[in-house]
Length: 258
Image 1 (cartoon, rainbow, N blue to C red):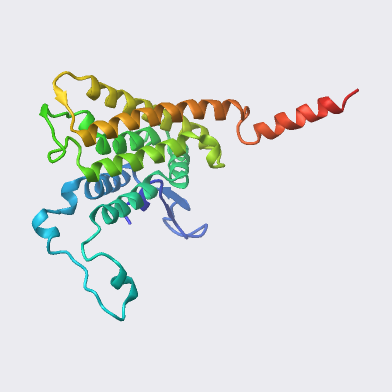
Image 2 (tube, one colour; image 1 turned 180 degrees about the horizontal axis):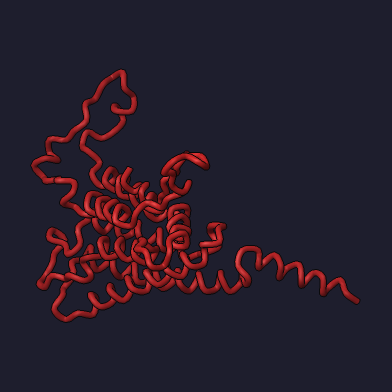
């Protein structure tokens, strides 16, 4: 519900001539959108928001009923990582889907320059800083698999965020005019994440645990390969959506000429 405020607009059904009527469309105030963004980030992206402890989880089980096939075939233990990832994935979808991003981009244009309005760079920066905060506030010391530098829930969230940014960086994957600026901004976010991860891996005073080291190493390679693929993909689609088709048609026309 809170995520819906991002890129939102209030619709006024007043008719022409109604006393004290306002314009039909009023963009949701920037302060309200920022408040909504902070709420979603705080209550969906940090481990503390879920209040899970080993003591609590040992009491979270599933009853087995012979007349309920779904419960009969599922494990008795609560699927912690799957359930939390489902919640966080839904939150990311609400915040980062191309439709929401496109509405935010339009609202920037609908709002006069001298008025405050939330922007795409601000939203993407806020999400990245929250999800990858371990890269900026790295704790010194030696970590172990039992005491990881980045928790398992956060690693899952970071991988999911990475995939969303990679999808957005491929501008041709969604067909709106806002695709190019969104693609450019997503690419910048990927590069910043890669730099932060590389900085942690190269730090002499940080000794990541096996989980975190594998996670960061794989993510660095994933970003590098994605950026290379994105460059090749966009270069082959000169002119934006339909560029490849126009190129194909031009070649066929030249072949048909004597």
